[in-house]
Length: 168
Ligand SMILES: [Zn+2]
Image (cartoon, rainbow, N blue to C red; front, side):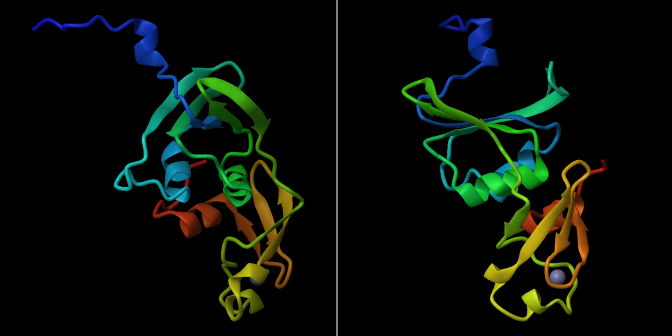
């Protein structure tokens, strides 16, 4: 069988998007987790491209997530920072990067996830009052402001997705 149109190697490797978000330097192996956190299943029609475990100068291996026609909210960027603290967000308009920045974990994160302590006061009231101090980024450690319970990256992943956590 012969292909009617030749596709260049670079076209196969890098599919440019016209408008949307490219999340680069995603922690290797976590792109599917990031996608699920963003509520993207594919069924809603979102056009997305994932690259898993590609070689990277900066971090040996990385994932890349490209999402067309979607720009991320601050809370979504904070969620990505919890899972993948070195990720870079590129906002694309008309095939050009119009905004590029590293995700950043604030000293305090609030609104998510649920505290793993079932007796914590935040589990008895409105979830918006959940607040955590970020004690360490790599490995991740966040401490509940209300009950001092520590949570790790896998605790967060289990809350936000169906995944049961990372091996590292
Ligand atoms: Zn708590």
